[in-house]
Length: 436
Image 1 (cartoon, rainbow, N blue to C red):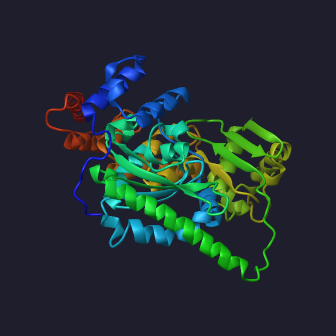
Image 2: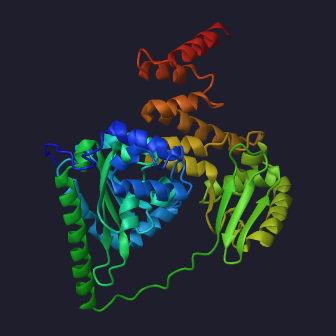
């Protein structure tokens, strides 16, 4: 998309006026004259965002873990048209396209985020990644969320975004409908700099949405003319379990099933065993598990502990009771530690840092737990050092893990402008560390 940019968004209001109107609205000054210069579409969206209690610097909710995302995408109606989306919106070298293209579902959850690799590294800092919910009720005014709220194509430029983390960006989005029932199937979005809100961009995104709807209808009619293949019965979704271990000595097991939600605080030993089984989904022999827990072969000590753990799980989640030979969980248990790693792999650096509430089972001396703890801590550090923006790095420098990390502090100094007022404090911390 190599068009010359002609502003098509809020021509009557400069970014400075929009920013002033935004501040006045947040302060409750609804009658301020600056608000009248903002497009009614944006002004109304800001008000809906306030009514939904959206945080002005909040992060999107992540409602789809890596496993759920893969399964959900595979069955989504828009999965069959992704090649068309790429061909129309990311022609040529998509990795150097200068824009990021996202496709989400009708609830605003992003299912595919592709495009320019440099931009994706930066947009990932604000949580614009697969699995994140970008509905208006979650992140406020943005092209994908507002397009779904209004059920029409929308362009949002810079300061018009409700969330301050998103205000450096501009975007165009259009809803996609079922070609027969007209219900919402999802949304397509183009995000980037000023070029993302050109008039031509909106025409292209609208045309892509219509082309997608036509392709969905053609594929559906083609399928009706064929004898449907025999399908295996769909497995019931069953129980979902999440083990919370970050910054906790006694882990919490959160179980969601047909009978409702249950939260159980586990003993330190049971937390260690369940964590090790959760991260080793292929299972562990009694010898390997006992070494990971106790530091030496101790199968006779492990067996009664496993009996007690099974009794706990039988009460709250019978489907999670581990089998033997090897010890293995019949259904996957997600962990908050693995969630952080998944966020890092998607480029959601700011969200990953926010989700990292501390070390994995910090008081545990089990060798297997120490290995998991170290791997998560190092993955977070190395990824942020290599890929994160300055704001995320500064936040990491204030965390327990980054506070005394000279490499982190020096990188922050290298990335900050020479006249930044934040440099003095960082220089003082580096000098203090070098004296010790």
